[in-house]
Length: 493
Image 1: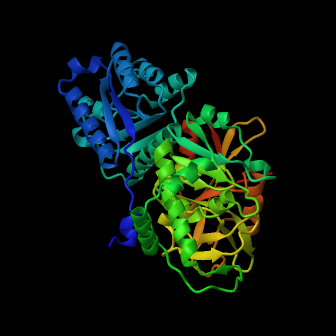
Image 2: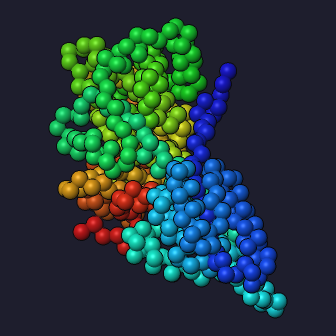
């Protein structure tokens, strides 16, 4: 039988990154062997990208404006997710700009010297040119800014023995994956926003326009049909999967959070199989859903039994967001592709004695980043919602965490609200909801004030690791702004 870790183990898509080196044609006759040396350095850089999980599309070395046009035209046809300019040596900005203008992908400039320093005692002009990776950076950035194409990032360091530089490059590989996933996403929209939550209302065309994705409008009837098609063998396999992935602990003090009864668990497993069918049938990358329910009807029974299946899909990289929160569905998708998880959260009670805030929700969660095995509880009441059903309870893995909230301003422009903190060990209430004990600077009250005044929606994605910088880079790829409310010196008013 498969183990817990085997079932939640993930593989990630390989982002398509176009690369090109740049130099000056005038040097080649003056310094025989220099071009070949620079191409060898570029090849080592590209091998490093492949080792980080990228599919590399190499455009070779641009050393003349005419060559730049040809390279740019070819790379544009490849439709890469990200463009990396490898600064091989000094290069005319006119030999670089045409590529960036033609490709149209977000640009990151990489400037890695082959060594940490020249051998001064044996230094030659050849050696200096081999180490001139930084020389034309100001010139190139000037040209890019004048063209309205500023780079999204710039990494300066050395080709070898530079974990800081290569760590940032690895971050950009993950950003490229997230960027590709968002701009190619198919997000299912099933139901309507939770009534009265003004921050859940959304114009789906605004997501199409800002991200390049597609919102697929669905009916509960689509899910009903998928659930009706579930076979007994498939149901049995899903129940076995649930048995491996979840614990069923004794109830706590909450009278509405009892054990998950066998018939309710079987129905949740059947609905989970139906969700799998729905995702496959419509080619969904994510799903935002909500159904209010009425007098225990079939839609209410279906809508109140999604949490187990939604959590399983979210852990597989298909985020599901309740209360029809399309924005948070995208935030969860982004964190997942950044390899940080991305669990559906909101602010829960503060613990002012311990200087922490509980964050979690009663909806779908990313069990791949849980602290231990998540717990199933049978809820006789879904607070604030109609119906009853099996719910998921856990806290996020202890250690560094990042909150990522996608919001919109008065003009409709998207903006990311971010925070970095820590997930701490300790007790959580046995209520069938997720709750993570989080500490954020400067203190719990100051964090809540800064976070709220930044104007997020009341939902956000919670992921593992301190990755606010990567989310900011992702936002910049879409031309969106971001704010990190836990940065030193941040002022909310």
